[in-house]
Length: 134
Image (cartoon, rainbow, N blue to C red; front, side):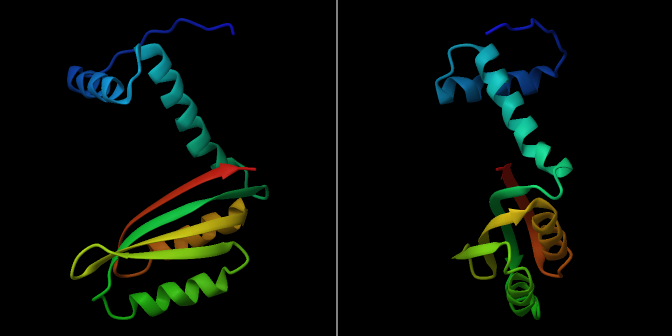
């Protein structure tokens, strides 16, 4: 495979953390690790322009279950989006925080709409959407 040689600038602290991470993961050189990182970056954000195409993935969210009505709201939203919601795993993180992992499959624009609606709910503290195009 043909490759192009590139150069870029980065803060020393970030480079140090990157080198530590690639050693921990077993990469023998930066080039391969950067190729994987770039590929992951492109894949992670490619779905944003794919709208009507099918995709699959997971929505990871944390929320404070003591926030009034948040659990009912999340359940109602997932039922409204049952065309893309396949399953949900619920994990208790501590006395008040929960993690939900929602597996999704369907039109990317519907998955995006679901994630946006969930993020707006009071009590939701973090949300990460990870998808792949099909």
